[in-house]
Image 1 (tube, rainbow, N blue to C red):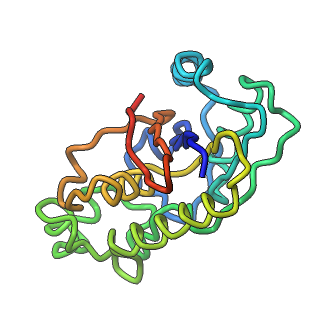
Image 2 (image 1 turned 90 degrees about the vertical axis):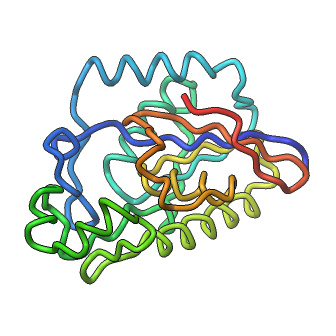
Image 3 (image 1 turned 30 degrees about the horizontal axis):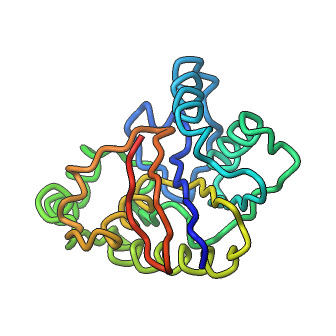
Length: 207
């Protein structure tokens, strides 16, 4: 397989990001019309624009509105407005179950065992009637493998998704324990650049 790059892009912020609420899948807010955040994303795209081979790109997105809206903005910046982003179910937000819509403090109070695991050992976190981070990692990485397999002819792959999905993919590639999750910071609009060479994935940089 020829060398190419994958760009994993976290969606721009919503009002729920700003309030510290866990959105999960039950809530599907729009991105904020925040000029500061949009300009930061524009600068990130401009920084890597010269490296993105847009001769025959493939674009994928989580079903969430915030991811699809972010994809639309980036497509415009790259002159790819007419190229549809394919919705990929495996790129969905973490299923926080009954913790959806709650703040961290509310989770600590209502589900103390979950809160304790989340604070001290994230690999053991199991959201009530929701996912574990191992669940997220398994389905996200499988989704990434499917995307790579079905995009062999693509010159580059752009993927719009959520912070947990991106972190779990990075940890899988680097063989890093999930407990290190709090140490990896990726802002809204942040980008992870992954190189694909000879069927091997390698993290190049975080932007």
